[in-house]
Length: 638
Image (cartoon, rainbow, N blue to C red; front, side, top):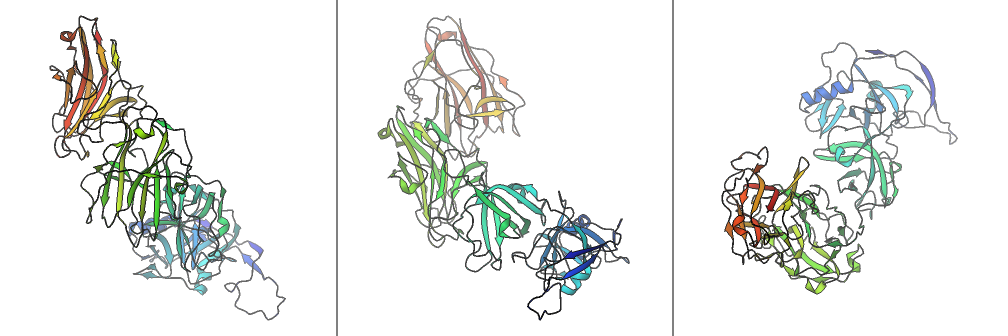
């Protein structure tokens, strides 16, 4: 327990109705001088104990210390300020002026309390007999229990008796949090500060249509939350700042919507350069692939070199969504509250160069389709503003017609010829047009690819031939973890024209090639990974070895073949299955603990020839979906 001794302090307080009950007749009135005595109370309870009791009671209202015969006081510090009018009939307090562990909202009928209950003021709250509850998610104290709101408001006259002010004033140091950290109960009713944030749509006022308004703010990774502003605030009609910086406010929640209350517009300091705008990068060489697997689910698409912009000035842009462990870009006008939306998702510059048979392809899926909304374009000049570019629409196959739900699988666009753009840099733009009162169709985009044609069993048209020994452990692979295997001389192709092929994956610092039919939406799914040709013309013997690992096994899917006439098209070659191979198998509930060596496979029968070794995966989204990993490939000769 903490006993508070009687200490006197003279403080000057501004005139407020809450403070004085008398009227001042003289225009030349004086600011009242009020003598404050340090309350002679014993602190014998904590805000944390109240919060724990709220949680133990599942948020339902209850009376605090109902059986206590002695006064029960908690110590707290005021973090709110209602002078600007954005905080109304609430006093927010936390347990410490810095690094607080718990905050609480005091519900009251009193207004304009800032002269007495100033931000930073230490207070002693007599809580025995008061009510506590989770009021729409916020830990709250009030006069009595209420079945609808959790607690009722404390009358103005009673507030003075229950919430005693100390002579102590402290600087309240806001807790620095991220936008993601704001989306939890940890900091509720405490003062927080967010850095490197900005308003998603700064071309508006703090409120609109004379109503309390939620304004979206975001960080540079696309994570977002709401700033909730009252239409009675003195800054309600003030334009939002169009920059990046800090916002300080009180962390709050309404049901499941986490948000922030500011005490005044001075708590918003956004004068720096905005992030998330288009930042051009050096044009990327083909092949180019983007499957959105490394993007943050739930945030706006924010990938280096990409542009994601709403040209009609609204907030709705492409976001990253996920279903069945597959990530993709998604957009819909549904519930956007934007009557007209034109949003563009534009790739980085892609250097077509002298790529053989260059093509563009991607996958789409539509949902709740009530009209065409997506179209795809190409331009050779892009500065970040789609309105400044000259766009050419491409003829692509798009998912369509799914009016009562989502398509069962993604639809491939087909291979779009890019040969007309040889030696040029192109930008691919996905344009969504809709509106909350019109076309609201949802579109999902995945597996964007630009490079050599792969459909119909195609691949490398002129396979590379190397001398033995040949070794590949994928450690030098530059495609990036989760991207398709793309090594000079190799062929990595979907024989049925789909978009999924062998990918580079990494676990515990080790890279390998991996594929699976799981979530491929392909029936069947047939992928080939073909080594460069190995010249055995000067050899009398040869040995092949590699290692495999299986995962979530539900059937055999991997086979190894050899050919002497492969020309880059797996459908044209004569393939002979390599027998006597030991494969990893049978791991039905997870992955094998380690890679399984294939054993040494004798290829001496092919001495004097050029051989191509291929790993074929054959499964189906609705059938065999076993995952296979391949590593440490070696072909030696004597």
